[in-house]
Every structure is written in C-alpha cells, then in structure tokens.
Image (cartoon, rainbow, N blue to C red; front, side, top):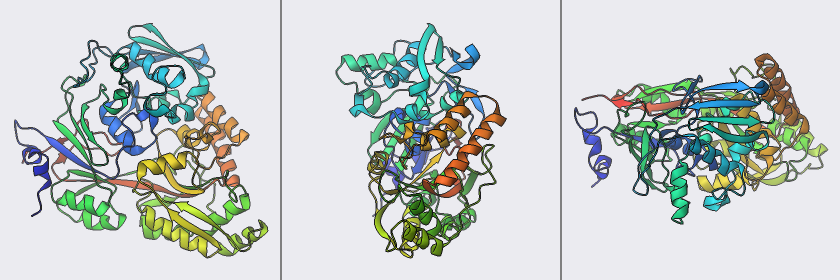
Amino acid sequence: MRVPFWLLLGGVLALAGVPGQAQTLVHCAEAAPDSLNPQYSTSGNSYDIAQQLYEKLVNVQRGSLELEPQLATGWELADEGRTVIFTLRQGVKWHRSKLFTPTRDFNADDVLFTFARQMDKNHPYNAVSGGKVYAPFHNLGLSTNLVAVEKLEPYKVRFRLKEPDAGLLRALTSQAMSMQSAEYAEAMLKAGTPEKVDLEPIGTAPFQLVRHLLDTEVRMRANKEYWRGAPPLTQLVFVIAPDATVRYAKLKAGECHTMTYPNPADLGRMRQDPIVRIVGVEAMSVGYVAMNMAKKPFDDLRVRMAVNLAVDKKAILDQAYMGTAKAATTPIPIGHWAHDDSVQDLPHDPAKARALLAEAGLKEGFETELWTMPVVRPYNPAPRRIAEMMQADLAKVGIKAKIVTYEWGEYVRRVRFGEAPMAQYGWSNDEVDRFMSDLLSCEAAKPGNGNLARWCDPEMDRLINAARRTSDQAARRGYYIQAQAIFRKTMPWLPVAHPHVYVALRPEVIDFRASPSTRLDFYGVGLKQP
C-alpha cells in the first residue's frame, strides 16, 4: 500500500490552509543544495535555500530585477566611489536554535565577520568546513578590490575599495554575501565545533532551519520574530525529486504544492490541468558547454570552432527545449541592456567542422569526454538528452565524446577544479558583471572558481574591470560589447540557450512570483483556505 506523502510529514499538508491551523508548503526541488553556507557555493539549489534562511545588506525585489535595502537601510558613496558607507537596520533578530540563543540583534560586528572570514586567510573561520574556495567572493573581484570592511558605529559600516565598482551593490545581493552571526561563530569556535556555523546555520530571514537530510529534504519553520513580520507559512519544506515526471506526479497527488522546471514536453498538458498553474518568466540565464582550454586539443581555436559548427543547436532548441529558449550567441542573455544583438550565431556546418579539424592536424578526429549534469537546471531542461544529441553530432565529424556524469555536488566540485575536458553548465543572475567576471575572468579561471574553460585573456580582464569602474551605463555597455566580441572570436564555450523558466503551482498557492534571476522566494507566499 502506498503511504500518502502528507502522512510522512505528520499530516501537516492535511491542515494546510485551514483557519487557525498550521500552513505547510512543500516544494519539489530538482536537486539538493551542495552547501548550506552560500559563501562556498555557486549552485542555484544552494542559493534557493539560502534565500529563505539568510539576508544580505542589499536585496533584489521579489519577482523583479530592482534593488532594495534589506539589512542596510541605505548607503552613501564617497571618495569618487571608492568608499561606500552602509547604515544598518536596527532591531533585526537572529534565529534561535538548539545550539545557540542569541543575546543581541544583528549589528556591524556581523558584517565584519561575514567578510573577514572570506578576506583574511588567517581568520579562524577562513578554512572551516574543509578550507573551501570562496568562489563568488573571488569571481566578483572583491578579493582584489575590497581593501577593508570597517565598523564606524554599532549600526554603520564602511567598505573601502581600491577602485570604484559600479557592480558592488548588485554583487552584495548575491546569496553568497549573506550575513552570518559573529556571536554564533564565536560560540561554536569556543565549543570546538566551528563547522556547525555552516552545517546548522542561523540567519535573520523569514524561515529558519529545522533539519537537513542530505539529498532528501530541507525543512524550515517560520521565523516569528522576523523584522518584516512573520511569513504566512508556518513551515516550508524542500523535498528533493530530480525527475521532472516524479515532481509533476507529486504535484498532482498533493504531495507538493510547487515544483521547479517542468519537462518542456509536459507544459502543454500541464496548462490544461485544472489543478496546475504555470508561472513563467524570461530568465537572465545562459546554458552552455565549456571547453577546457588547459586540456588538448581544446587549446586550439580551430577545434573549439569545429565543435560549435558540428553541433546542431536548432535541433536541440526544437527537440529538447521545445520552444522554451532562444539560441545563445554570447554569455549575456538576450534582452539584457548589455547584450550585443549584432553577434551572429555560428551555422550548423559539419563539413567546415571537419575541415577545421583536419587543419588542426586531427583529420581522423579525436576522443574526449562530455560531462553531463545529473539534474535539470533553469538553463538546461534535459541534460542527458542534450548530451546525447551533441554526442551524435560530434561523432559525425570524427569527435568521439564519451558521456560522463556524477552526483550533482561531486559534479560541481570536479568541473570547478578543471577535471572535465567538456562540461555542461550554466548561470543565472541579475547583474551583467556576474556573467563575465564569474565565468570568464582570469580570477575565475583559478581552481575551484567558475571559469570552466580555464581561459585567461588580459584584454577580456581589462574590459571586465573597466566596466566595473564606471557608473556610466553607456560606457559600461561599450566595454561589454567589446568583451562579447572577444568571446565570439575565441569561443571558449559552445553557447546553447537563454531560457524561459517555469514553476508549476497547485491552485491553493497564492502570491508566488517568479523571478528573472530564477531564485525562489517564499516570503509572502500563502495557501488559500479550502
């Protein structure tokens, strides 16, 4: 006999939406977080959990790309943009946990701790949890441009930069810049268990962690002391269900209220389903295959161009994305103010691909590996199928690509440390600099960071940095146009798609908003009364 999922949750779903009773929303997620400390991660799955648990100085408004103050109430620039002073919000309570009861509110000491553990290699927390690489901190240029974070008053801090950074505020909206409690960290350090700060985190956000079952679920409860008011939901549960068909079945059975990333092939049927509502948005996202230029023969431009010419991208968009994406020509999404519409996509030309391989001394082709994600992502709805289509296209020009995959967390770790010759990956964000600095800068090419192509071009770096240093949007666009031209000439990737992403909801879910950044935000979401 099949046990209904709501019974496994102690009957809480049966009470959802009943007046005076608990409201528990269950979200069917496509993959597990690779860390509960977003400073260590660039994974959207980790960021979706962090969005519920932590807050930043600056945030992106739910369902939009507009900035809003969060733990900072305001900021001012000085010294020609080299100094930013933040006034902090007062009266913000930290979560209470079984390990720790806070004795004070959020203040400047927490801001200093949050950045010091990433900036200072001698900080006692810098190497906690295995000495991870703080990839976002490096990729954003903060490791080279941020001189100091200083406490001016209990609720005022100053960021000092070497050079002005037009993207700083946007950078601080990243979940990787989430505030952590200095008092909790000090207590866990004294107890000899500093890793608890990362494994059993506390934050200031609308929800706080109850438990994390690896690769199974993340359970959270409402933060009743939340400074903006307690959320309508009493509990929020992320259940991990990698298969989109399984997620849809759970949604129909009432075992989940929401699910991310339906199969494109199911969208038509789901739109006709009376118990399903589809919410979609054109995402600031790109899906691609990186070619590792530190591994032969991908150090040869002719080989990289051959790969791009060999793959029938239109067939992939038609048969795998099924009309839910546009062809990617550059890293910056179509429709973004910095996207260069003049960059033309390469044609599907197997004959030219074979000629380029022969010119590179590879007339008989070569063998390689195509690493394939084990989970769907907003930028890739069918990783295995897309990999198989690419494999078949590459074989036609003599490139024998073996498909390789790992569990998601292991996959992310291995590709970021440069093991893969070719790897599916992607990126979603609301700040243009993140598409360039996190994915294509020389800093990001270091082991553990996000430049999977291991491509370091001094001129590309100069343009990325120049765009950061000016607040003139027209000038910034000019730098990014030049950067996209360099990308197009070098082709470190096979750029695939800029997607439209979807979330499926049961009809009782109210006030959910999809975000162009693809992040999930459940504050303000509720369940209708029956």
